[in-house]
Image 1 (cartoon, helix red, strand yellow):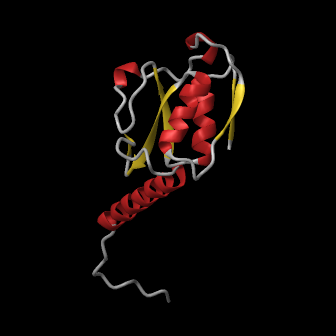
Image 2: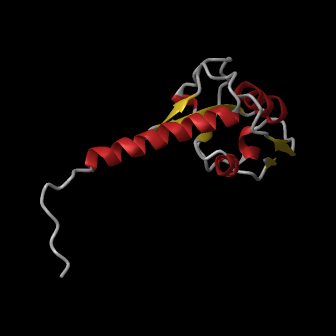
Length: 142
């Protein structure tokens, strides 16, 4: 996957490209950095409609390549080092998004699969909870 980043790119565009490749992961951008294995505070989360040129002191354009076997920590560092963006990867956990705190050594592929499995189990359990067998005999067709 490649994400083109320039001064006219919105944070939402970056998020959409990322999530198109990793549907059970998403990225959020913050105004403050976090350390490895540390959570980002929501009060520093940037709005998705912000244009990159409005929040960066250094105006560098480029293409960021992100491969499935890249570790979360490497992806977050690449955004920071190349574009000055403080990024946190989040994973879908059943019906909500959770920061990948403590999972920075996992690859994007592994986390995306974990998110998919979590969502699949949630869908199955919802289905089973709503499923009841009828004790009535079916009507005759003829």
